[in-house]
Every structure is written in structure tokens, then in C-alpha cells.
Amino acid sequence: MAKPRVLVTRPAHQAQGQMTLLCSLGIDPVSLPLLEITAVAEADSAFPLLKSNIMDLDLYHKVIFISANAVTAGMDLIDQYWPQLPLGIEWFAIGQQTALTLDNFGITAQRSPAGYDSEALLSLPLLQNIAEQKILIMRGEGGRETLAEQLRQRGARVDYADLYRRSMPHYTSEQIISSIIDKPLAAALLTSGEAVNNLTQLINDHDLKALRHTPLVVPSERVARIATELGYTRVMTASGPDNQAMAETVLSTIDMDDRT
Image 1 (cartoon, rainbow, N blue to C red):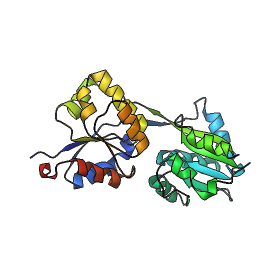
Image 2 (image 1 turned 90 degrees about the horizontal axis):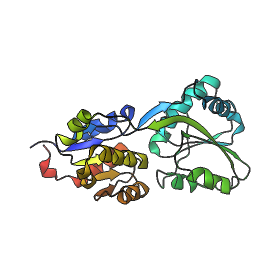
Image 3 (image 1 turned 90 degrees about the vertical axis):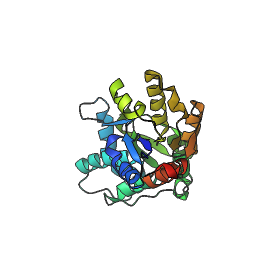
Image 4 (image 1 turned 180 degrees about the vertical axis):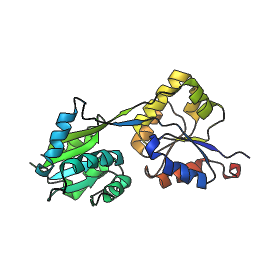
């Protein structure tokens, strides 16, 4: 019998590891990125503020990276302006993959073992008594404000370094037909609320109502709530956004007898 097809929606440059793992488990992964990551360029009107924050890095007590994408874009800029990292900064990461990416740059970051989101990071003891401390959040433009709001309520002075923008890739009807419509999907993997919103836009634009009943695997209860509120009827929550956790949840939704 044919292998079950699973839609992988990570940005193109981050999808390969997930697809390789799914292949090894007898699954046919189909890549359809629902987010496109574009770094803020020097010609961009937002770049002077970003550059200023990076050049003032030594003035911050703590630096928090929101994602692996933030690490990649942020460390590229830091390397340009800081041949050696300033001393005395406490580094933080949301999620294991973000921390591992920082480790590749020689930075050991604090992360929460309690989860993969802002709420989990905020539970760390090192982020409790932070009155008058300066904190820089390295992130993509926009996104949730929960982290900064809570840190400010605790008395910290918080700045953003907006390193990249997220957008919805454009797909032709032919691309949609070949990836989604030609053969049925056993499940779809979505790693953020924004990806769920973009899938919903895709469904509306191409009249793909049946996708609302395709099993969705998401990384957290927060993303699961977003999907449920948007009308998806089969939402499964993985133990985290990493490839292994998402793959294990996919396997639990698929009839093992159907895999070859």
C-alpha cells in the first residue's frame, strides 16, 4: 500500500530534518512551507534601530532569543559588530532548538525545562527579580507581546531587536493540486499559530474545506486552541515543536498497517 502522506509546513530552510525523519519512519513527507523568513536588510528603514540595539549589546543585562531563526540572523549581525562577545550578559533561549543553535555559536543559554513558549521561559528564577535590568529580545518582527509585557511588569526595561519578517509564500493552483489535492493527506504538521492562520488563508483562497478535517499536529496547547477556534476538527498536540516530538504524534494518528 502507498505510504501515508504528511504535509510539512516549516520554512524551506528548516524542513529537511523533519522530512528525513519522517521518511525513515515510512512516511511520505510533502513540503509546503507556510512561512517565508526574510532578514531585515541594511537598506530597510528598520535597520538603523536594529543596528543601534546590536551595537549597544554590552548595555544589556540579559538577551533573549525567541527562535532558531532569531539566533541565525542575530548572530550574523553580532559577529559583524562584536569580534568578541561582550562579557556579563546572561543569555536565554525559548525552546531546545533555539538553545542548541546558540550552542553552535559558543553561547550557553538558559532555557526552561517546563516548555517551549514565553510562559515557560518566564517561570525561570533568573527572570523574577529583574527590576531596572535592561533586556533585549531578539525576534522576528511582530509576534506575541506576552514576554515583553510580563518582563516590564516585573520592572525590566525591554527593547526589541526585530531581525526578520515572516510572510506567507505564494502558491499557484498547480502547486496546491500537486501537493495537497492529487493524493490525500494523512496529517499536516504546523509549528506555530501563524502557520495555522496561513493554512486557513490557503484553504479559503483555494476552496480546500476538506483540509479542516485533516489531522493537524501542533506543538502546544496555545496553537491547538487557535486551530480549534478556526474550525479544525482533528487537532493533536505534540509534547513540543522538535522533529522527534512532532513525528511521534504523527505516528500515533496514522494506522500503522497502512505504512509500508
